[in-house]
Length: 300
Image 1 (cartoon, one colour):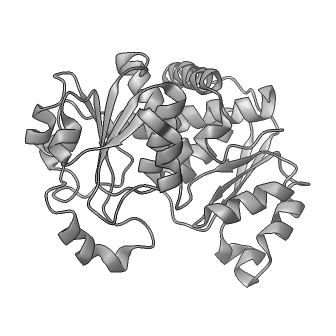
Image 2: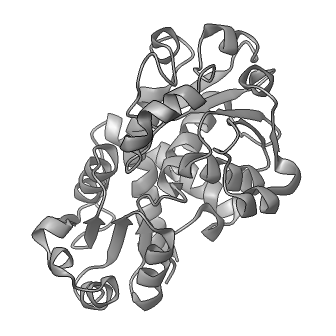
């Protein structure tokens, strides 16, 4: 029995295996030939944070695989009345086959997983967003092949997505250069563990030089809305725009996990331009997570 709380819960071969299976599943979906590999399996979905892509992709994915998903929020469960997460974990472990958790504290997720007797999937915490990295890597592999040895630029907040990119750089063997304002750097322990696979650039343009992939995210994540004005000032000059893309490799791709704010972290001409693969990236959440569910429920 395996959990997927972090990218580091997978070996490089397992990560690539899920990516390749996700690509196969996308082809099945496009040809309307999805195979019900998880019949009668049930996924419990605990969401303490709002969601569009994560919720829809997990629910649709379980349906396409022949199973079922149950959405649970604090508003419609006993979690909203103070039931401890650990008690919920023990109960749900006797009723469902896997549980995805989207919450604030990564430590709470880890405590939840400690008492679960079924696989637990990190559907996002303030520290990491590993399901998104499966989709991002699937998208890159589909367009450009293996990412080993490539250069990736992260521009903006050193948030959970940045942390996940750093973890993945170490696993898959690419180099992640990040450009973040002072005070908004990624987690120090994650940076340290990545060693030579990551470095900090002096400016966004420097990070983008000869990059094969440029990635950004919103400047104020969920729970940081009160900091919006201060962050807009701190991130002045960090918008990914055409001049930034022009110093990257000619065939560089642009990604964003969405939702996006055009005119803030990315210009409209970039996100809606020819180098952007954000819509396919979003769609691959469905297929990468189906591959992950198969891995956790059938192969682990």
